[in-house]
Image (cartoon, rainbow, N blue to C red; front, top):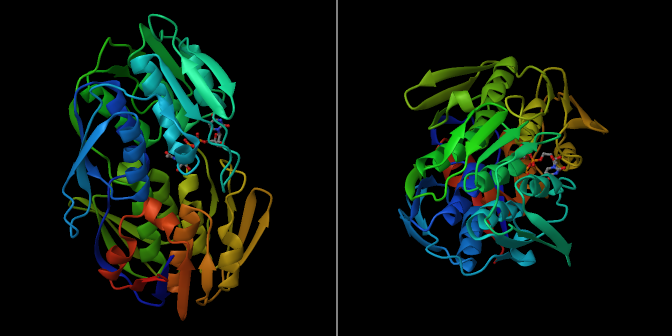
Length: 427
Ligand code: UD1
């Protein structure tokens, strides 16, 4: 298994390209199921999760061709074509490894009237049920049957019918499944209390490019006028706001300055204001933003919540940054119940963090030191990379496969801006 080895204390400076967004890619890929014409996705990040999703789609009968795979290039272009659907089953083996597989449910039922998808079960960061996804499909007339860990959804003769979907709380994935199902349902669907994450807007824009009619983009009420069929399109995946935020923290924690090319400020308002409150300087530059540290890191009080509030996917990285703040910070995690697995690892590096229920109290320390560490999820792993960049001495981060799910060629990007970082393989 690979490890990442970092010798900390280097100030990062230079240009760092931001890849296409993982979470946008994972909802744009299943859009291919909605039409028999080709869907071409540009700026797809090269990530393990994107490959896994491609394999799942292949199993359902979608052909995929990839261009732009030169090893020195970031991103790639994939053309997907679901001329016909040969299987409507998403098996446990794939779904348990990648929860986003549940996003084939809506499009499969919308296109062919049926789908059988394994229920994902819990994961490292929490229970993560899919009840809202299922209720959304029911609101469009699907019939559900749950047996042996699988859900089978069928649309009665004539297919899904438009309806009102009222989410009791915000779910990104359930909003995505609802939207992808509604575009081919008969009549009008209203999705209330919809997630407003930029990835939802990216999905809606791709669906519109495919011929869908959707109103209310960027708001919490989406109105969809169903179409009999959608057509092919070419669409470019939005830049990854979480990757951009992570590298912004890398600039801050090393007292450096990074130009994040491709980053879009409007997709990351609370990340930008958090960085500014912590003492960072954020400037617009052509094609991106520059994030620079300006003296000591200031402590913050932050609570995670759905967009446009502070994203749960940035909590671990901000925590790493705040371990070195001048003062005490308070972080509150409101989205997932078990998202502090990085805390014991950061404490082993000399941080002073105490978890009390959903809150974490981060008392800033003068310095942290390198150590062998590991994490059980993607963003937690990134927080350890950030701590390693600032620590005295050597840090080894194990279980690199978590990072490979969500950060395209992390060590290359960081080496190019001055980090002393490498990947070691244990064979
Ligand atoms: C997506 C993101 C993930 C991010 C999360 C919150 C992808 C592939 N993943 O995950 O990176 O951390 O949004 O911004 O885009 N819930 C239910 N029932 C449901 C669905 C969700 O109770 O049917 C709960 C979840 O357990 C969680 C909360 O709702 O506590 C929000 O989850 P949700 O927004 O659905 O997250 P995902 O779409 O799984």
